[in-house]
Length: 115
Length: 111
Image: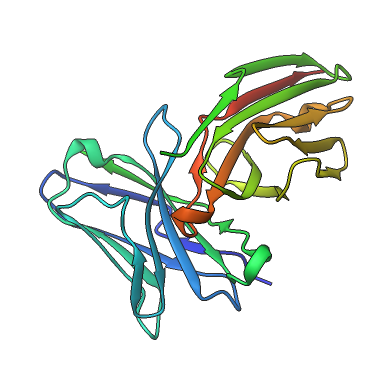
Protein backbone atom coordinates (compact mmCIF):
# COMPACT_ATOMS: atom_id res chain seq x y z
CA UNK A 1 0.00 0.00 0.00
CA UNK A 2 1.79 3.06 -1.26
CA UNK A 3 2.12 5.93 1.17
CA UNK A 4 1.61 9.62 0.53
CA UNK A 5 3.62 10.69 -2.48
CA UNK A 6 5.04 14.12 -3.07
CA UNK A 7 6.97 15.54 -5.97
CA UNK A 8 9.33 16.99 -6.62
CA UNK A 9 11.38 16.14 -3.55
CA UNK A 10 13.61 19.15 -4.10
CA UNK A 11 12.73 22.34 -5.96
CA UNK A 12 14.92 25.34 -6.65
CA UNK A 13 13.37 28.59 -7.84
CA UNK A 14 14.62 32.12 -8.32
CA UNK A 15 12.82 35.01 -6.72
CA UNK A 16 9.69 35.92 -8.66
CA UNK A 17 9.17 32.49 -10.21
CA UNK A 18 6.30 30.12 -9.50
CA UNK A 19 6.54 26.90 -7.50
CA UNK A 20 4.13 23.99 -7.93
CA UNK A 21 4.17 21.21 -5.37
CA UNK A 22 2.23 17.99 -5.92
CA UNK A 23 0.75 15.50 -3.49
CA UNK A 24 -0.96 12.18 -4.10
CA UNK A 25 -2.76 10.88 -0.99
CA UNK A 26 -2.67 7.33 0.28
CA UNK A 27 -5.03 4.94 -1.44
CA UNK A 28 -8.50 5.27 0.01
CA UNK A 29 -7.83 8.69 1.55
CA UNK A 30 -9.94 11.60 0.41
CA UNK A 31 -8.62 14.32 2.72
CA UNK A 32 -5.41 16.23 2.10
CA UNK A 33 -3.54 18.65 4.34
CA UNK A 34 -0.53 20.89 3.64
CA UNK A 35 1.96 21.92 6.34
CA UNK A 36 5.08 24.05 6.17
CA UNK A 37 8.25 23.60 8.19
CA UNK A 38 10.48 26.65 8.15
CA UNK A 39 14.14 26.21 9.09
CA UNK A 40 14.51 25.70 12.85
CA UNK A 41 10.73 25.96 13.32
CA UNK A 42 7.92 23.50 13.91
CA UNK A 43 5.34 22.26 11.46
CA UNK A 44 2.58 24.78 10.75
CA UNK A 45 -0.80 23.97 9.23
CA UNK A 46 -1.60 25.69 5.95
CA UNK A 47 -4.69 24.24 4.33
CA UNK A 48 -7.12 21.30 4.42
CA UNK A 49 -8.84 20.08 1.27
CA UNK A 50 -11.25 17.43 0.12
CA UNK A 51 -11.89 16.64 -3.53
CA UNK A 52 -12.79 19.90 -5.27
CA UNK A 53 -13.27 21.73 -1.96
CA UNK A 54 -11.14 23.84 0.35
CA UNK A 55 -12.33 23.05 3.88
CA UNK A 56 -9.96 25.15 6.00
CA UNK A 57 -7.38 27.60 4.69
CA UNK A 58 -6.83 29.45 7.95
CA UNK A 59 -3.07 28.84 7.88
CA UNK A 60 -2.51 29.91 4.31
CA UNK A 61 -0.80 33.24 3.63
CA UNK A 62 -3.31 35.64 2.12
CA UNK A 63 -1.29 36.41 -0.98
CA UNK A 64 0.64 34.35 -3.53
CA UNK A 65 -0.38 30.95 -2.09
CA UNK A 66 -3.18 28.76 -3.41
CA UNK A 67 -4.13 25.10 -3.18
CA UNK A 68 -6.43 22.77 -5.04
CA UNK A 69 -7.44 19.13 -4.99
CA UNK A 70 -9.20 18.40 -8.28
CA UNK A 71 -11.58 15.55 -8.93
CA UNK A 72 -8.85 13.78 -10.85
CA UNK A 73 -5.14 13.98 -10.13
CA UNK A 74 -2.99 15.12 -7.24
CA UNK A 75 -3.41 18.03 -4.89
CA UNK A 76 -1.37 21.08 -5.92
CA UNK A 77 0.12 23.76 -3.68
CA UNK A 78 1.03 26.76 -5.80
CA UNK A 79 3.26 29.60 -4.73
CA UNK A 80 3.42 32.57 -7.08
CA UNK A 81 6.27 35.09 -7.20
CA UNK A 82 8.35 33.23 -4.64
CA UNK A 83 10.51 35.12 -2.15
CA UNK A 84 13.45 33.91 -0.07
CA UNK A 85 11.20 33.58 2.98
CA UNK A 86 9.25 30.84 1.18
CA UNK A 87 12.26 28.53 1.45
CA UNK A 88 11.06 25.66 3.62
CA UNK A 89 10.00 22.03 3.63
CA UNK A 90 6.40 21.58 2.56
CA UNK A 91 4.68 18.43 3.76
CA UNK A 92 1.45 16.91 2.58
CA UNK A 93 -0.60 14.57 4.73
CA UNK A 94 -3.72 12.55 4.02
CA UNK A 95 -6.44 10.91 6.09
CA UNK A 96 -9.62 8.90 5.72
CA UNK A 97 -11.47 11.15 8.19
CA UNK A 98 -13.57 8.43 9.70
CA UNK A 99 -14.43 9.57 13.20
CA UNK A 100 -11.72 8.67 15.70
CA UNK A 101 -9.44 7.08 13.12
CA UNK A 102 -8.61 10.37 11.52
CA UNK A 103 -4.88 9.90 11.66
CA UNK A 104 -2.90 12.01 9.23
CA UNK A 105 -0.10 10.24 7.37
CA UNK A 106 2.66 12.39 5.98
CA UNK A 107 4.59 12.31 2.76
CA UNK A 108 8.37 12.78 2.44
CA UNK A 109 8.06 16.50 1.76
CA UNK A 110 9.20 18.92 -0.91
CA UNK A 111 12.16 21.07 0.01
CA UNK A 112 11.85 24.44 -1.70
CA UNK A 113 14.90 26.65 -2.03
CA UNK A 114 14.46 30.18 -3.33
CA UNK A 115 17.62 31.79 -4.67
CA UNK B 1 -5.43 29.61 20.64
CA UNK B 2 -4.24 26.01 20.84
CA UNK B 3 -0.67 25.64 22.09
CA UNK B 4 1.75 22.74 22.34
CA UNK B 5 5.09 22.92 24.17
CA UNK B 6 7.61 20.11 24.11
CA UNK B 7 10.52 19.63 26.49
CA UNK B 8 13.38 19.19 26.51
CA UNK B 9 14.36 20.60 23.10
CA UNK B 10 17.18 18.08 22.88
CA UNK B 11 18.09 14.92 24.73
CA UNK B 12 21.32 12.91 24.65
CA UNK B 13 21.08 9.37 25.96
CA UNK B 14 23.42 6.45 26.28
CA UNK B 15 22.14 3.25 24.76
CA UNK B 16 19.96 1.56 27.36
CA UNK B 17 19.36 4.77 29.35
CA UNK B 18 15.58 5.18 29.66
CA UNK B 19 14.02 8.64 29.63
CA UNK B 20 10.79 10.56 29.07
CA UNK B 21 9.77 13.37 26.73
CA UNK B 22 7.11 15.86 27.76
CA UNK B 23 4.33 17.46 25.70
CA UNK B 24 2.23 20.11 27.45
CA UNK B 25 -0.85 21.35 25.68
CA UNK B 26 -3.58 23.94 25.94
CA UNK B 27 -6.55 23.23 23.73
CA UNK B 28 -10.23 24.05 23.68
CA UNK B 29 -11.59 20.52 23.80
CA UNK B 30 -9.11 17.80 22.90
CA UNK B 31 -10.12 15.56 20.04
CA UNK B 32 -6.82 13.69 19.88
CA UNK B 33 -3.12 13.92 20.73
CA UNK B 34 -0.65 12.50 18.24
CA UNK B 35 2.99 11.47 18.46
CA UNK B 36 5.17 11.34 15.38
CA UNK B 37 8.80 10.52 14.75
CA UNK B 38 10.77 12.51 12.17
CA UNK B 39 14.15 11.52 10.80
CA UNK B 40 16.37 14.13 9.10
CA UNK B 41 15.20 14.92 5.58
CA UNK B 42 12.03 12.85 5.91
CA UNK B 43 8.38 13.34 6.70
CA UNK B 44 6.82 12.68 10.12
CA UNK B 45 6.07 9.03 10.76
CA UNK B 46 2.96 8.27 12.80
CA UNK B 47 3.48 6.57 16.17
CA UNK B 48 0.42 6.95 18.42
CA UNK B 49 -2.94 8.60 18.89
CA UNK B 50 -4.32 9.21 22.38
CA UNK B 51 -7.89 10.37 22.92
CA UNK B 52 -8.60 10.66 26.64
CA UNK B 53 -6.83 11.16 29.96
CA UNK B 54 -5.51 7.93 31.39
CA UNK B 55 -5.00 6.30 28.04
CA UNK B 56 -1.68 4.57 27.31
CA UNK B 57 -0.25 3.05 24.14
CA UNK B 58 2.92 1.06 23.54
CA UNK B 59 5.02 0.14 20.56
CA UNK B 60 8.34 -1.65 21.00
CA UNK B 61 10.47 0.58 23.28
CA UNK B 62 8.02 3.49 23.21
CA UNK B 63 5.08 4.14 25.52
CA UNK B 64 2.81 7.17 25.33
CA UNK B 65 0.58 8.38 28.16
CA UNK B 66 -1.96 11.17 28.42
CA UNK B 67 -3.31 13.41 31.19
CA UNK B 68 -5.63 16.39 30.94
CA UNK B 69 -2.71 18.79 30.46
CA UNK B 70 0.21 16.80 29.12
CA UNK B 71 1.48 13.70 27.44
CA UNK B 72 4.66 11.76 27.99
CA UNK B 73 6.60 9.62 25.58
CA UNK B 74 8.68 7.12 27.52
CA UNK B 75 11.64 5.53 25.77
CA UNK B 76 12.75 2.34 27.51
CA UNK B 77 16.27 1.02 26.98
CA UNK B 78 16.76 3.06 23.80
CA UNK B 79 18.93 1.96 20.91
CA UNK B 80 20.84 4.19 18.46
CA UNK B 81 18.09 3.64 15.88
CA UNK B 82 15.68 5.47 18.20
CA UNK B 83 17.60 8.68 17.45
CA UNK B 84 15.14 11.09 15.80
CA UNK B 85 13.03 14.15 16.46
CA UNK B 86 9.80 13.28 18.24
CA UNK B 87 6.84 15.52 17.49
CA UNK B 88 3.67 15.99 19.50
CA UNK B 89 0.52 17.43 17.95
CA UNK B 90 -3.04 18.12 19.10
CA UNK B 91 -6.31 18.19 17.26
CA UNK B 92 -8.98 20.37 18.85
CA UNK B 93 -12.69 19.77 18.48
CA UNK B 94 -13.29 23.41 17.59
CA UNK B 95 -10.45 23.57 15.08
CA UNK B 96 -11.58 20.97 12.59
CA UNK B 97 -8.99 18.50 11.43
CA UNK B 98 -5.84 20.60 11.57
CA UNK B 99 -2.96 19.55 13.76
CA UNK B 100 -1.11 22.00 16.00
CA UNK B 101 2.46 20.83 16.51
CA UNK B 102 5.01 21.42 19.23
CA UNK B 103 8.60 22.27 18.41
CA UNK B 104 9.78 18.70 18.87
CA UNK B 105 12.41 16.96 20.98
CA UNK B 106 15.63 15.90 19.24
CA UNK B 107 16.80 12.62 20.72
CA UNK B 108 20.31 11.28 20.17
CA UNK B 109 21.10 7.81 21.48
CA UNK B 110 24.80 7.05 21.62
CA UNK B 111 26.08 3.48 21.52
